Length: 376
Image 1 (spheres, rainbow, N blue to C red):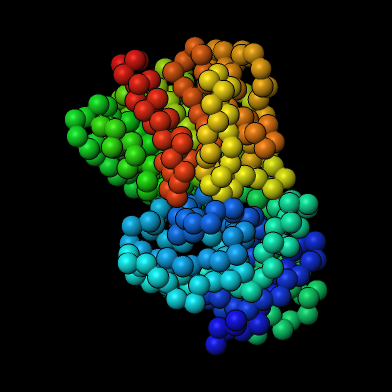
Image 2: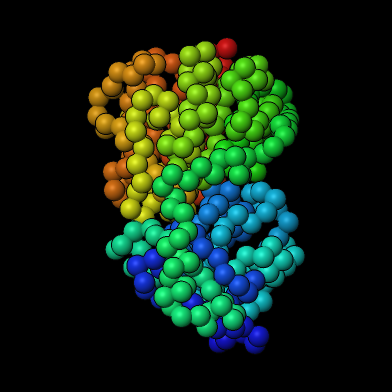
């Protein structure tokens, strides 16, 4: 059913394939990288996750928006997605915590979206062809010739070579204090950090000093007296040389170090491994990852389009000692974790803060606390 007042809209991929729909959220135009997310829930966390900066997110679940928008589940102070694509949005939210409709939230923040799209066909196309640039056009601009719209799409910068760290990072340091007895003080480098991450660390007795990505190594080590954490974030890891330098300083100082998502890629590059662009990336809350030591499989939350090119098998030598691949994705054998054997550092390519779910990897924060206490 088409909602009254919605306008004709078109979604146009850079390979020329078009999908017709209706406007949803703000009316106008937007461009970015088309990616799909597989979660049936957690759309509010997805929208406000800085890791999605520059991306137009296609929700594979057909019905989105039932629970509306609440005051608890934002992972940052704004919506970061460049656009939002759904098939069948809820006509009205139905949840006791809801404070606004999903469309109203998008409209308030000027996010251009599109509804009534065959998201299954769109997802299958992206699975076959890979993530690519895309545009959403609604209102008067949607009446423009397709060739004119396609020229706008292909002029959009690629995610390869995109440096978005400074765009999403905090400009001012802030403290998330420990809850309960204090067990340590750490520096968390904000590369696009989600709000739940320092919260999970503080729940384990850590004072978390969240620092801008542009911080100096001296300040990072001075503040992070017991350890350093490197967060998730968007963009091409090959562009973040300053952050790689920060991580190398942490490794050289033997400061306990934990990286997730983009932070995992930074650890890989700091150790001397390359990173590369995945065909369509890993996104959503149902990605199976295996710990190669325990053989345990965890269902995990992902949002990454790049991966670390490290050898799976016996430990290899790096400038910082021996390193092994600790986790792999069971869908495609992509490297999902690194463990340093001679310095106190490890990383994973996924989101242990579980916002939104699942909670299988929550114990990684406990592993970080143990690493801090063992190396104090």
